[in-house]
Image (tube, rainbow, N blue to C red; front, top):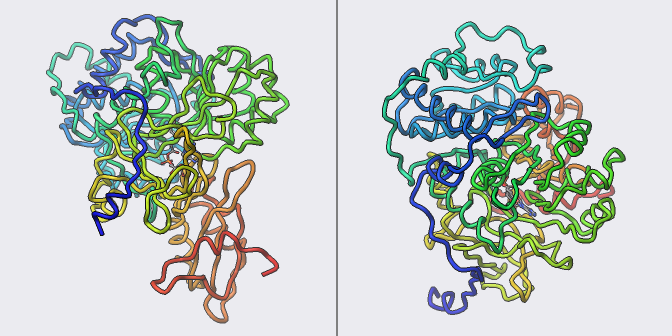
Length: 551
Ligand code: 4UU
């Protein structure tokens, strides 16, 4: 049977020549690629206007590395948690930890203490780097023995809003000043060590730590930097100005934008929170040449009356990913721009692949705009039909990918790793796709449990567990329902114990204080007599997704 399967195998390879992946850690790689830059701006906050040059990022990274090693006594392999909004210091906070041989786990700054406790506990975080406004939440999420380091507030407004920070908190500025004269040697650095531990629920279950090595992250940047794909041009050709509100804790913002931007010598414009006003002001003020977006942001640009075509004239490239962008949306955006030459390039990525595996080349023809990309260098893809055979062009099936960007595995979860990456090293994405005769891929459906709300991950299992905490509830299943403005919204189907009463409001009230806003049950709560399951007990999510009130 194996021989038959092997004979019928159809692997889609990149038509671009393979890239030699440098044997460097991420900080070594970024330092080398941006070594010729010093006073040029690296990251600027659109709200506070605080800016770090390339030289300042290097110096702050070095000092933070020394502070972590000598003042906080962390050793290679230890984990630093970052609970930070998008801000210029995000970059040295990551790079310094990596220079010291540590790993970083990046958390959503809007998470509740309960959500953070799970992530930081699972990752084994030794230190939490955060901002004054989040210090109390950070303290509630970790034990009293875990040091908390306070970075400067991202902007004056959030500085004014915060209560007095915990007395035992350490201060980033003081630590960096003390480290200034430090000459302690930093470890040489191991490219195969785990660099980042973002959390993803993958195809099933609760969020899991995704072990991304330096090599995974470096390989992905290097493979996206080939001239045929290069969306971000090198500083010598004119420094790219990249406006992004995509969170740096998520792999798209982290490696797909921020690290890639540094490697290319770009100027990144960061925003701690998205507001239409701040975004529009930044378009006018910074005249970005590149926008990194998710479909819900593209929707904002396309329909919001405050966004005009004049503001979009500086934009050379728009990259979209993380959720499906419909042809209608892409056309609406083009109409708003009033520019036929501005074609949105989609990329397809996953946390587990650091993130990109498919990318549409920059010089894309308009009829390929709905494609999620072609295979990037060093990467291979297969499409597995429902009957187990490899798909030919235009046949639908599950996307399988492999390449140097594939995660090392899920942290402390060999079972989930094996369920995701098969013995031959193919990662099963849980996405249904097809490819055309020119090897452009198109998204059809997502068959894994994962719900995406404005590009953010929502794990149904996590919400089901919370609903099940209510004693009145006998069974529960959560699925995503399509929504124009949010991509999807979580909807709960609930079975109550006989003679028990519970309202939709009561269930929502139970969930609300425990989770970040986008995980709320905005798709509603539906009471059923029974959750449809297959004989082995697996929830039939497709049946629930198709549920209609008149049933
Ligand atoms: C339809 O969302 C991401 C990463 C996205 C990304 C990063 C860098 C896109 C382009 C880029 O340049 O990661 P996760 O782990 O949060 O979610 C992964 C899932 C995929 O399995 C798929 O279901 O997000 C969905 N997805 C997409 N869906 C990702 N990209 C796309 C896309 N169209 N272009």
